[in-house]
Image (cartoon, rainbow, N blue to C red; front, side, top):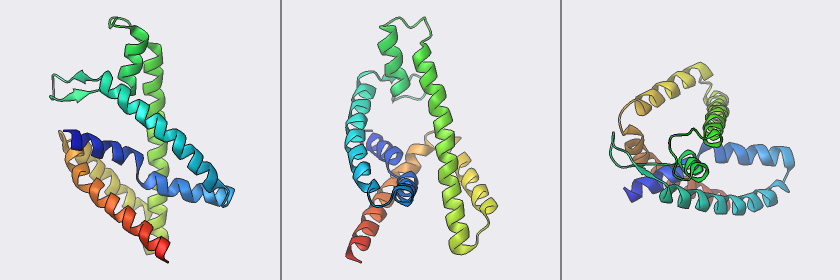
Length: 172
């Protein structure tokens, strides 16, 4: 549905990576890093809008699961192939390979940050945190449409918590 698409889009753009990234940027660059984060946020807003628009234009009907499928790999493929689906598009393949490598790296950094945070705050060993995260991820990923169902609940709660914490920090 349209709401589920919005929730998945929000989940991919807002999360633990934002928190870890801000802390790392301010830690490395000081308070001046905030200005550059604002500039990048403006540029990334335009990029996100363009990506979403292209994904809607070039989406395809998913015959196996119903609904639609699409994204950058699909519109890159359509742009370079101009309707000829028999050839393989090197650019779209390179995009998918780089996305998988980046996704794995970013996931590891975020998982490490959460595990270290839980260890520092509550002395929970990182191995236990890893086992819990991998187990939950496996349950969500390997069940049909479970990702969307989980995100339908988690993202609104996360967004409300994010806003409440922001207001709390500003008031302090």
